[in-house]
Image 1 (cartoon, rainbow, N blue to C red):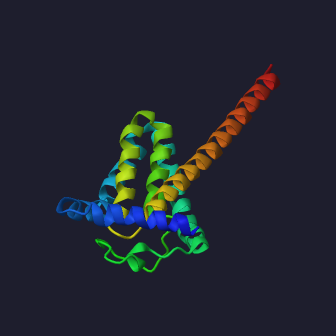
Image 2 (image 1 turned 135 degrees about the vertical axis):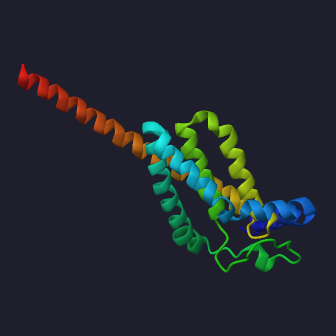
Length: 195
């Protein structure tokens, strides 16, 4: 475990301190701040509900449930379980560009939520994956540039987020198949009764 921590600390220093420059020092704090994206997220969600048809409405409802689930599980179960201290509290000379909270570090909620959303929307809109996953990766990487997460926090968060999305997608496919079978059985029974 100590070897992993040492590798992660080295990677953190390489990215956060070694790659620091005036451009990323301005760009990454903007990317990492959720409030900067709130209106964009709301507009996309409303578009899906109003103009997205059945697929849009299903994905809009599922994304709300998924993010609520992933955020709460990550924050209230996984972070206390691993109890990893953020690098901004322990790495000397860290380039801290965002609020260094007292919350634990692993996994990164930004990574969990953004990769969960990318995986979910990519299921319903496969062509969007070429935009969604790089976007999620940039947001996740911003956490390292801002000094508040280790690289393994965002890699672990990305894997957890995708796993949560796959779980929700499988649950939806199971429920949809069951509803479809029940609907077909009900229709067949009604036809037999009226024959």
